[in-house]
Image (cartoon, rainbow, N blue to C red):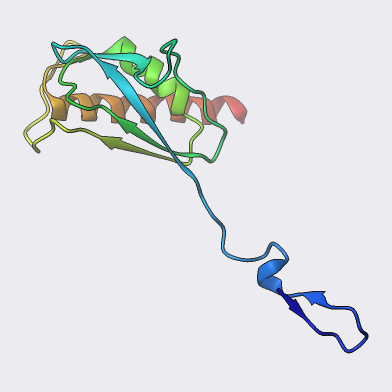
Length: 133
């Protein structure tokens, strides 16, 4: 988009000069879930099952599919990959809004998996910010 300046040379309008609305990309990562519902810290989309590490400020959507069991150490591994993201959206196909069932550091229903993963992301993100100070 150009606007005439009267001197024969067009100038860029503000929206075309890079000051227009910001476009944010949302990445989606599907986590690997086995036939029994165990969520593992592996990507279902990568052929080598590696999880991506995202740049600071990225918006990521973690798809837990039908996952209904998650151990705390696996939740921490997942949280470390997304701790620098600006926003993390957790998506579950099995969650029903029931009371989370978390016992001895492991989640045993889909709502518990969401809650345990949220707590792990909060915990890891808080400690990352403390070390930068």
